[in-house]
Image (cartoon, rainbow over all chains, first blue to last red; front, side):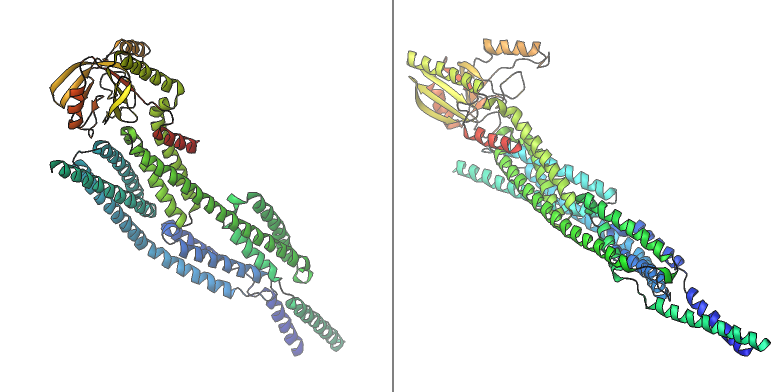
Amino acid sequence: MKKLNVLLLITFATLLLFVACASEPTQEINDAKAAIDSAAAEGATTYCSEDLGKLNERYTAALENAKTNTGKMFKSNQEAKDLLVQIKTDAESLKATVPAKKEEAKSKAVNALSEVKTVTEETKVLVENAPTGKDSQAEIEAFKADLAAIEEAITATQGQIDAENYLGAVESCPAMMEKINSISEQVKTAIEKIEALKSKKKK
Amino acid sequence: MKKRTGRIALGLITGSLLVTVILTLWAGSRTIPPEVAIAQTAMATLDNSEVSCYLPDQYTSVREKYSQVLQRWNQELHKWIWLRQYNSFGKEFAAISTSCTQIKNELAIRIQKRIKDLSTFGKELATRASNLRQFTLTINEGRIARKDLTRAELRLAQSAISLKYADVDQAEAHLNQSDRHLSNAENHLYRILKRYQSNNQIDRWRAWINTTLNESRRHRSLVVVVSKLDRKLVVYRNGAKVRTFKVGLGRNALSDKRQSGDYATPEGRYRIHRKNPHSLYHKALLLDYPNNEDRRSYQKARKNGLIPPQAGIGGLIEIHGGGISFMTRGCIALENDDMDALYNLLPTGTPVTIVGSTDKDEQLITLFKELSSEQD
C-alpha cells in the first residue's frame, strides 16, 4: 500500500510537469504594454523615438519568447516575465525623461528662432537705412520682398513652437538662418557698392 | 486476492508511468523549428518599415501568406503535443523569411532611388531658382517675384535638411512646395513679359521704329527711339545712330501705360512738347502723352472695365535727369550729364518713339523663355 501511495505521488508529480508554469505572463504583458503606451503618450514618440523604438523591439522579443514557450513541453515563462518586468521599468524611466527632453527641444527651438529674428531685424534696419543709388532702388525693394518671405516663415515657425512642434521648429530654423544670412550679405554688398559709387561721384 | 489486485494495479501504474515517461521524453526532444521565430522577426521588421507605401502588393501578398501559415501554426500548437506536426512549418516559415528579405532589399533599393530622384529634383529646382533670382535682378519688375522666389529657396533648404535626416516624405513635400512657389514667381513675370515674346507685338514696335527712322531720313532730322527692355535711348539723325544713352524707368516700366498712377511707361509715337530747363529732376523734355491713339486705348479699356471708371489717363511723361538709379513713375530718367547733352541736342517737336523691345530674341527674353520651358 505504501508503494502504491509513492507511485500515485510520482504520477501526480509527472502530470504536474505538464501544467506547471503553463500560464502566459498576461499581467506582465499588459503592464509592459501600458507603460510603453504611456511613455509614447507623454511624447516619447517625438522626443525619444530611438529609445522608444528599442523598447518596442524588446517588447516584441519578449512576446516572441513567451509565445515560443507555449509550444514547449516543459513550459517556463520566467525569462519572458523577467524581460517584461524590466521593459515596464525602463518604459517608466523613459517616460520620466520625456519632459526634460521636451523642454530641451523647446529651448533649442526658441533660441534658434530668436537668432533668426535678431538677424532678420538687423537686416531690416540695414535695408530701411540703405542709401539709394545706382540701380539700388529696385534691388532694395526686392530685398524687402525677400524679408517679407522670411518674416512669413518666422511666423510659421512660431506657430510650430506654439503648437509644441519643437523638433519641426528646430528643423525649420537652419534654412531660415542660411537664407537671412545670405540676404544680409547681399544687402551689405549692395550698400558698399552704392557708397563706393557715391564717393566716386564726389571725387 | 487483495495482493493480486495490488500487483495488477502496481503493474498498470508502472506501465502507464513508463509510457508517459517515454512519450514525455519523445515530445520534449521535439523542438520548435527556429524558422518560426526568424519569420516572425522578419515579418515584424517589414511591418514597421515603409513597405506598404513602396511595395504594397508584394507586402500584402507576403502578409496574407504569413497570416495563413501562422493561423495553421496556432491551430497546431493547440493540439496535444504528441499529435503536433512541425515538419512542413519549418519550410513554410523559411519561405516567408526569404520573401521578407527580398522585399526588404527591394525596399532599400526603392528608398535609395527615391532619395536620388528627390536630390535630382532638388538640383533642378535650385538651378531654376538661381536663374530666376538672376533674372529678377535685371528688371525692376523682378521684385514682384522675389517673395515667392525666397519662399521657394527656403523650402529647398528645408528639403535638404529633411533628406539629411532621411525624412523622404517631408523632403518631397518641401520640394513640391518649392516647385509651386517657383511657378508662382515665374507666372508673375510671365504676365508682364509675355507681350515681349509675341511676334505681332514686336512687328508692331518695329513698324513704329521704321516709320520714325523714315521720317528722320525724309526730313534729315533728329529722332529718338527708347527701348524699354534694353533700357536704352538712341538718337538718330538722317536715319543713322548718333548717340546712345542708358536710361532708368519706372517700377512697372515694362507694361504699357493704361491709366494715371500705374507707374508704367507708355509705348507709342510721341513728340517733344516742351523743354523745361529748371525741372525738379535737373532738366526735362515733356512728351505729348497722351496722344490720340492713347486716348482711344484708354476709352476702350474703360469701356471694357479694364480700368476703374474714376481712373484718369495720366500725363506729364518726361525724359528727365536725376539719374538712372531711382524708379520713376513712368518717365524716362537719364544721368544729369547725359541729360545736359540730350537737352542741348533735341529741339521741341522731335519725334520720340517708345517701344517695349526691338528684338524678340533679346537676351533677357531668351533667358525668360528658358525659364518658362524649364517650368513646362
